[in-house]
Amino acid sequence: MTVTPPPETLRAPLVVEFPFTRSLGPVQSAFLTGLRERTVLGVRTEAGEVLVPPVEYDPATAAELRELVEVGATGTVSTWAWNPEPRAGQPLATPFAWVLVRLDGADTALLHALDAPGPDAVRTGLRVRIRWAAERSGAITDIACFEPYEDDDPATGPQPHEGEFDDPVTGIVAAARLDYTYSPGRAQTRYLYALAERRTVGERCPSCAKVYVPPRGACPTCGVATTDQVEVGPRGTVTTYCIVNIKAKNLDIEVPYVYAHIALDGAGLALHGRIAGIPYDQVRMGLRVEPVWSEDGRYPDHYRPTGEPDADYDTYKELL
Image (cartoon, rainbow, N blue to C red; front, side, top):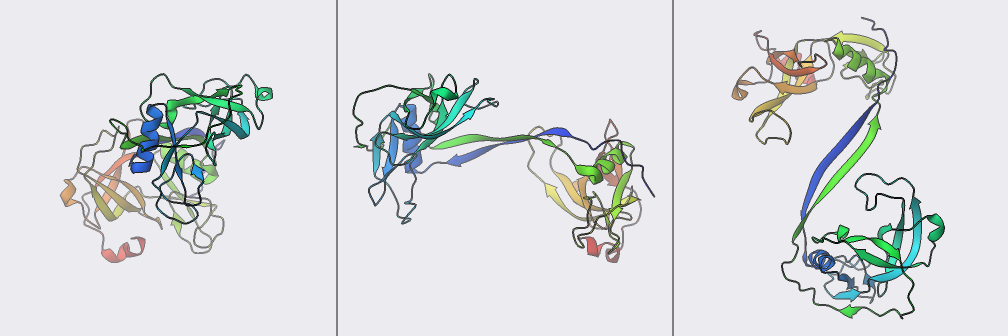
């Protein structure tokens, strides 16, 4: 059937966010613990260069590096870029400069924020010093930022350091976040508008005749535009599935539950959805299912058995 195009392409803010947990080796542990103690450590390479931040293996020879040295809390800006509109979670809430700073005694530069009144106050060669955070926990944020610093003291060279501290930091949790505006495009916009009407609409390839759900606007196999819209389902067949035993954060679904690939009647591609209304250990390939819509009716919350006989394997084997 032909579907009337929606009045406008959809757009919505989207946030992808997760905590990244990692353990630390001896070099990174010493570096972050040192920041907590207001000490900046680097590592010396086989060629005698001092790398800050330190790494565990020589980037030139791949040799293991363990010779730690302490460098200064002052340094020189090697390059910079002005940030007029800080984003949430950045080091400073007011406009600042991103700078690469070569700390005294180091041969490489450290990226961080510089607190300056404006871009006219920043230049390559500017002398700066660390402004330490009032509360420190063993993270790069223990350096609150850099600030301009006029000094006449000669720079000191790197000093040997054992890297030994009380209560060393052995692991970190870094919050990864990406927020952006997502536009699904015309094909998926039509698909989403149809879902709001409790219909599932795909698009047929004019070359291979497969119906893709959700549609992408082009056939991934033939590479041609798919403009012929086709309503499929609402019923379908479970082609394959998995049992989920780990509860996801902020998801109010008791485990175990089943997530399945479902080939809707008339579709040439299986989509995925949750199976409910049946014990998890009774879900099977070939099970016939139908959608149960969300409370607001905008999308299928899950699929449940229809009570029909299971589909024959030959009817869905090409959709596995």
